[in-house]
Length: 354
Image (cartoon, rainbow, N blue to C red):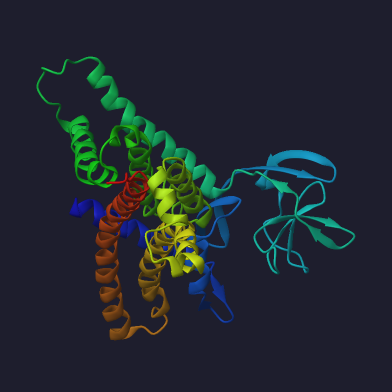
C-alpha cells in the first residue's frame, strides 16, 4: 500500500510539473492559485496536462437549451483562447465566459448581454461521477455474483469479495445498527450506498489522472443532494413522539406560551443536514487544496535554485506523501462520519415514547 501511495504522489508531481509550464503570469511567475483551483473546480473540459503551451484535454459533450432551441455538441467547438472580451467563442452564439459573474459558465450573448441557458452538460464532475458509479456497481455486483454461486454453508470468500464482505459487515454492525436501532434493516441499503458512494468518490478524487481526478465530494451540489436524501428519509421516518418533542416538548408551560424551544427544535431539523453537507464538502475540498499547495512549493522555489530549491523540494515531497497518506485515511473517515450521522439522525427520528 505504501508503494501505491508513493506512485500516486509521484504521478501528482509529474502532472503538476507539466501543467505548471502553462500556469504562469508576468515574467515567468508561477500562478499557484490557477493550478490549485484548476484541479478542484468543475469544468466543461477534462484537462489532463500541458505539453509546452498546448493543453491536453478530453472534450466533453455540451447540452444546453438557448433561445434558439436545444443544442448538443462537443466542447472542442469552443475556441481555446478567450477573445478581448474574455469569451471563448463557440457555436450558436454561445460562449464560455472567463471573467465576471459567469466565469467558467456557458452563456448566450443577446445584444451584448450574458444570458444563462438551461445547461445540463456533462461536465468533468458529472463524467467522473458516472465512472465512480460504474466502479461502485462492479464492487457490488462481483461479490453478489460470488454469493449467487455459493451456499451459506460454503467457506467464507477471500480476495476482493472477502474484503467487501468485511467492510459491509463492519459498517452494518458498528455504524448502521447502533445508530438506527431496531428495524435498521430497512435503512441499510440507503446508508450502505452512501458509504460506498462517498468512499469511492473520495478515493478516485485523490488520483491526479483519469479515470480519477474529479472533485466529486468537494462539489457542494453533490453533498447537498446527499444531505437532502438523508433529510427526506429522516423526516418521513419520524415518529409521533419525534414530532411531539419538536412542536410540543416536555418543558414548563411558560416556555410553551413563548415558543422559543419549539422554534429552536424546528430550526434543528434543517441544521442537521446542513452540517452533513458542509462537513463533507469542506473537508474534501480543503484536503485536495492543501495537498496540491504543498506540491506547488517545489515549482515556486524552482526559480531560486541552490540549496533552498533542493531543501524545499525534499520537504515538499515529504509533506506531499504525508498528506497523501492522510487523504487515504480522510477518505474513509468522511464516508464513515456521513453514514454514522445519517444513521443517528434517522434513529433519533424513530424514537418512541417510553
